[in-house]
Image 1 (cartoon, rainbow, N blue to C red):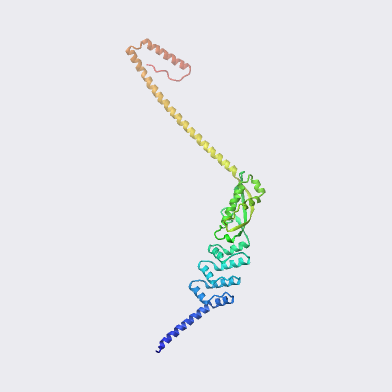
Image 2: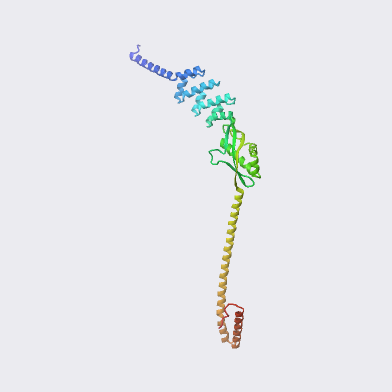
Length: 337
């Protein structure tokens, strides 16, 4: 059976298209493939095509593998691609591994990628392991410029410290950051100054603060190893003890004034209550005095009291009034019928 000529034409066109696609892909990745081949870090063209379909930056993977091989580390392309797809910074990790190898710091690919995926700067961590860095305490961009503490004599001291640290690679994943170091050092300085009996002793021997804080093991659970703590500056602040005593005196004064005002108010209330009772008793006496003339008239009418008795009573009342006048009593004389 003879194949039609149109079929041959179709197959030819398809073949030409495939050849063109192959040439385009080859020239697209030929440079990278050739560089990798010359560096003994070969990466197949088909692998590069597969990376492109997986939206992986082929140039980043190839250059990272070349750099690793040149440093004596044979890291598979699949591992590089996996870390890239996980969101890691492949060139960053390779640079850190190379630096660690040159500095003879034990660092494996798995540890380095874990640190990178944890969001830590692995290159900075390796560099800090080789060249320790200095942390200002408190931080220069923090809300406070000094660490303030008060000795037992009430004098405030303002301190600045500089902490020299070195990164501990083994504790970098899950270890606390610089902020924890700054907070712990500040806490140690405040505690040391607060336990000092006299602020002069701190001023005379500030390195005692450093020694006390260093013995506290402040780098436990952090990603750093504290090498030294140096007190950069110590200044005398306010007399906090005197201020507190003054504030306490003002508070006591206000409390005593309030208590005195309370007692005065109670006394005034009691006085008013007594005045009311006096007026009530006076009203009762007045009512009783008003009944006296009626009783006298009734006694005279009933014959229970004579006229002479009445006059003798009047004489007694007059005599009483005279004596009260001589004594200076301003009270009113008894009521007369």
